[in-house]
Image 1: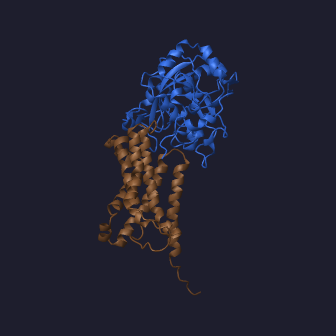
Image 2: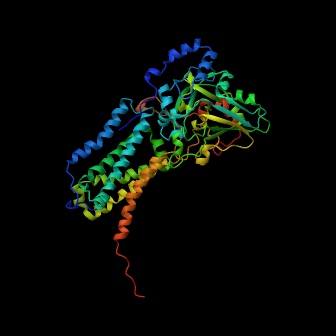
Length: 213
Length: 314
């Protein structure tokens, strides 16, 4: 989502292009499977919790995939830029399904309990904030929005995806007991993807001019 | 995508409730126990005969499938399906339980002797996990008080400390990159809590010996406390003067106290404890039910805590 809105896909490795709709179709397979398995009672002893967690995890995975696109292009000349919008929107859709599952299936739309959760539970507060951040990014993920906002302003807004990625892994770490490996692995991946950008921006900055002694 | 690991128990191996209830009537205790004792560890469950108990709830049982495939036993991994998938490697025979500390008669019991010497009862208890889900489980076991009386604690003994087997080579969850808990798993009770008639040492569930994933061959069940107090696969019970360390309390003292009594009024710092989801009830559309004080056992145990600030001593 962040970065230049459109870049020439000229140099490097050319991948066979597939229609973007295919990204959406493949991307929604886990959701369709999860809902189907849930209705068929194939999600184990605690199906609601399984569905809720799996949808959240897929949102995080797609978020990570959107963040991986720039490093893949810069480091390995693999250009997947034309699919980034679809992947980013998939992250948003999964986050929305995750949220709806929490609101409707987990909390049964008990508004008082939900509000108490948002106010009192840091992991819910962070999760909610992360979703709120994703909303303007999803709403502006179209060519009309880029034209209206101008490329620079659009790119600046979409840097919020970095905040969302940090929020998503924090949300994950805070919901588990102790320090199991899996959320830490996701946190490490996000840290690498964001760290890469930080290092690159520092390296690319012109070094301060030396004063003569 | 792998949604669910196949169960280790073939459907054909699951004994229908009517069959084992029936079988229990003619299986004499002695015969059943001799059979159980002759089985090497990690093998199929053996039937246990057990008397009914007035402490049992008449709520709908959580299915055997759910009880034995969805639980926490971090020695085998942090996933809820890890214990069922990986606990086969635990060798539960031979097995001894060492009872030591401030007792008149310290002893090392072979598990089969311990079972043989006890009058087994079926105790159908609610089980409330600190994570916010619950089950109704038909345990088979004996009151911990029976064992305590046998070893004659000294007047100085104020607490009972428990320890799980420490066997990294048989427990694949113990060598994770970041240890989730300090091993071995340890738990503890105040002596009066341990003596309460609700507190049992469970050696079976659903009329048969405990499956490994549920803490074979012997585990603690304290139904008014969060599930993590129910230490599994116990090898040592010590009578001590000072409040013993407990695993989750060591891991996160602000989140898990020594007492860990089920209390809807005292939230976990990160989530509410006011409600719970009963496993097997409603599937995807499970409705939360209110969590009861002391998990519904207030009548039997509330007096243990009179005058205590349960917000501080959670």
